Length: 93
Ligand SMILES: [Zn+2]
Ligand SMILES: [Zn+2]
Image 1: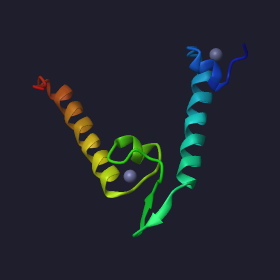
Image 2: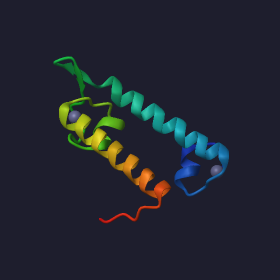
Image 3: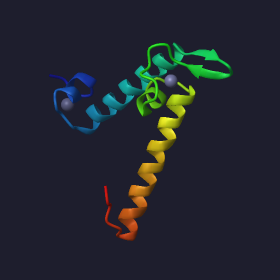
């Protein structure tokens, strides 16, 4: 199998060129999905996104209220987790 393809990455290869191919592939997918968005009330809305998920926002480019909220909540959680790690605070789930 030749390296530098997303296929190779998906097959489990983690060579730099395959990681890069995978990253580029994801980017392309996102751009494609973003192009499918329609504008509703001044916000991009993706007709096929799973709304209210971070995924809807970051992978589909959906900017509806639910997706934006889910995304900022996830961002907040990541920030808190990072802070907790740096400050040595144990997370109480
Ligand atoms: Zn490879
Ligand atoms: Zn949405």
